[in-house]
Length: 385
Ligand code: NZQ
Ligand code: ZN
Image 1 (cartoon, rainbow, N blue to C red):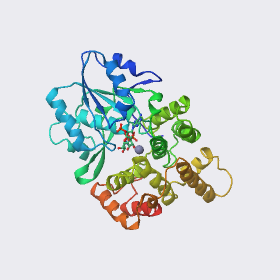
Image 2: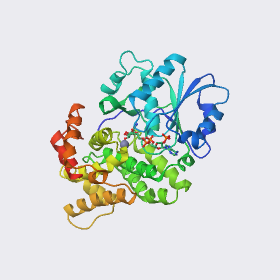
Image 3: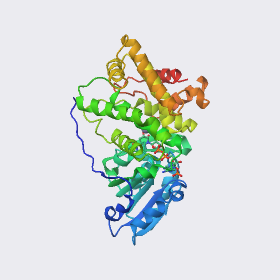
Image 4: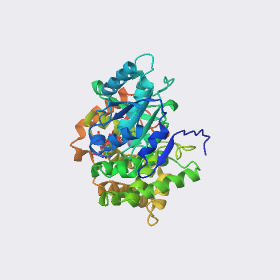
């Protein structure tokens, strides 16, 4: 096992009817800016519930943070805060709103051009406004981690930053808030959470026995409840387990002491930036193709995955690896998430542009061994056609 340093300061409040707890979680004298997305927070009544819980505090709103939040929109929130002087942020929404709030929190006091935060992947962040979140979409883990993904429309760049300054102070996870989600977003959440676990597990054996068993438990849980969260949208226990699995999938726990890959995400981000495909759907395309192309480097873990997650114990090593990759693809497809580029209207002639963007963003040595060169990324995309 590798050495590690693990510190996660986010206070989680989990369960039905927990939005009222905001009153004890947000400082009494805070001047609060609520940040939210399109219309869902208002339509579902969550925004009104949040405002009621904040009582007499000075409360402002900033709506319109889009899926795959844009730098352009977020900078309007930064200007508003610099003008009005709010001192506490509250994200109400999914990963995009929480990620956007992290960027805003770091950008308000940033000296220099805030886009540098993204270009340096967070290395230059020296502080951030405090913030909390009310999660409405289980998927990204953003509610309990220090990462954020922001896009610049002007250049079609989708970049990641992380900083210990942008852990949420608290996150409220009420599974009943997910009942109103379109089923396609629920399916996206299952695929995103599954892929997060895979990015931290499907590398090479590193004797992280605990981490491996945690990861396999999360993967098996997602397989077990994947169809149920779609067919029984108001099954509380299914939604609660999805919510907690997604949070645990990317809060630092399973990554501690083991190698990480993340090439599926980096390639996927370029597909979203260029073609507007939902984040999780890009992962459903890239992950099976990635495992196929890098099957030699990942052989040990692929066999472990086949045996422990899918109970594939018969046949040769090649057959078990083939079957495990096929099961992964079938699982995503069973959720209604297509796994081929062609199903999103993308053909071989468009791969070159994706490779150019990876190059422009310095994504030339990805993966747990930094051996995913542009040539390997190209083979992965070709395998995903
Ligand atoms: O905008 P509104 O109207 O609120 O609608 C949203 C949005 O259209 C809707 N929605 C959210 N909660 C709802 C709801 N609709 C009805 N009822 C509810 N309760 O869902 C749509 C998608 O929301 P979004 O926040 O974009 O989805 P998600 O949580 O999947 O976030 C995706 C973003 O997170 C980034 C992705 O790259 C992408 O930009 N990621 C962030 C990570 C992190 N911070 O650690 C890791 C991930 O790998 C991921 O990259
Ligand atoms: Zn993701």
